Figure 1 (cartoon, rainbow, N blue to C red):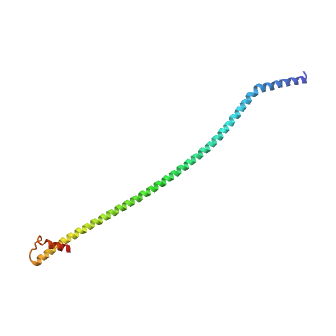
Figure 2: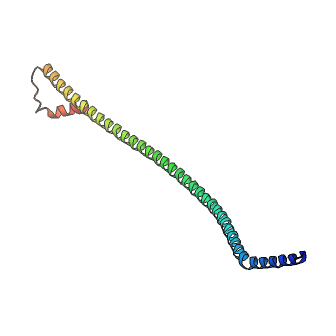
Figure 3: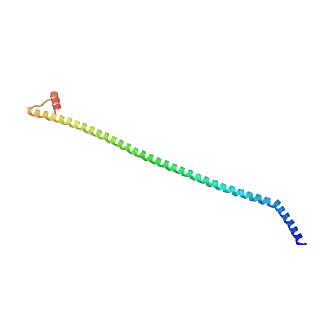
Length: 156
């Protein structure tokens, strides 16, 4: 065989090999590569979507935390205001109660003073009667002279 014959035979074998590879081997490899590229693209897309979902979730969490902090601060302020109001009301009630107690004590003291004056008038009237009795050297009848004793009591 000559080089030309060998070269032609090799060219024919090469052409058959190319045809066989293009017909039977290359389509499954191309399909596998296309599927692999598609899966990689889907994975990258899913990763991007997950990243954006994570960012949105973080933003929602921050908003909820801010709302919770604001709500907690508001509740704390309300509780402090309510506590202050309760303290003020208790002070007002205590002040009113103290004023009532002082008024009652003053009224009671006034009543005791009136009773003491009345008792003193009775004693003075009795002493006056005894003094008059001693002056006249006779016994003064209290029942007979009740009107005189009443006027004396009123004058004192």
